Length: 158
Length: 362
Image (cartoon, rainbow over all chains, first blue to last red; front, side, top):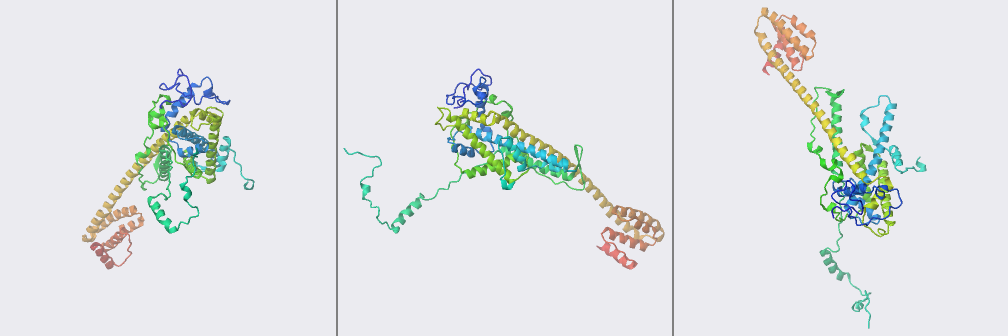
């Protein structure tokens, strides 16, 4: 059914709701907030983000992720889910793509900073090479560390 | 009353003797029959997983083309401030053919400019959430696909090269994120009594899991797509258009300078051939008295020509000093040879005259 809010209940009086989709939730996911810091939905102002997310879900057809949906569905199946809802699968695909893209952007900043340092230390460093960026472990390690992934070399390779 | 058990072996089945020998020759026709029906043939199960994101592909292609154009501009031009000037007007700039479809607008302007809740929902199979089975793929295939995705993301971010170990590490990170995310997602099912045994995908636990993983809402994914993918695409297309415009300007400048040069060469060629031959035709028929002034004028013209040809001016001076008609012919012949790319240093008058005749015969 079009306009399902995927179990998210929000008030119809809240601004930004689309085309009367409010309060159609089946209550399937109206459980406790789980005691975490998830305030956007479980708090008092829960309607707006929930409605945005609900609307966003319906528009996801035009968002083509680089990560194939089949790959995401594979991991969902491994996690014990029946991955047949294209919308959720696609949302996870794009979310993963975003996560990796953020890491890569950070690595690029590290690479730029390192290249800049090297060029400033080298007299007459070529400007043409400024456009070339090579991803190395040296740049990737600190970027991953920012996201809680610590890379450590084996003792014998240090 | 006799009980009937499910799965009980019927009495007729008991007539089969387990140790009854069945010869291979008797099996063969049955096996052939089955083989012809195709029941025993192995299923050729091939699923094709496409890594297709037209927007990302276009962005990367446009980036490559911009690099090609930029390197051509760097090769053939001299940057002065904001303008490019031809480095060598004699050098022809190669023509490039990048079809305009490469920079076509793949995203409808309206779609990502408006807030998502202003866009009316279109009733499609996707928006309805009709179940769609995905092909079953192995973990190795998944990793391979993810490695390719990482390469695409690296190129999209602006990296031009990467070490293989970095790609493997990124793939590991992506896989780890996916696993952790789904485990977290499952945890939110487990703490809910209604969802504990459910395997259907729900949005609310997903949002909670994402929030607990990253500290942001899933709606941020929209901002990522809008700002990092679409805006990047637009920016790259704009840069490509700008560089292509610069290259077109250089190309036009190059073509006009080449045309001018060709015109100049054409004019020079007309002068060298026509006027010089007139001179040669004029000289043999004149007497010695008039040849003195004639030789002077011819010496001046030839001197100029030699200067234009890059020869020394001493030749023209020596030519202007001669008075004999035969010597004039000799030197004229030498000049003619010079123009033809060969230098005759003959001192014999008769021989030179013969050469002169030969030259005219040819």
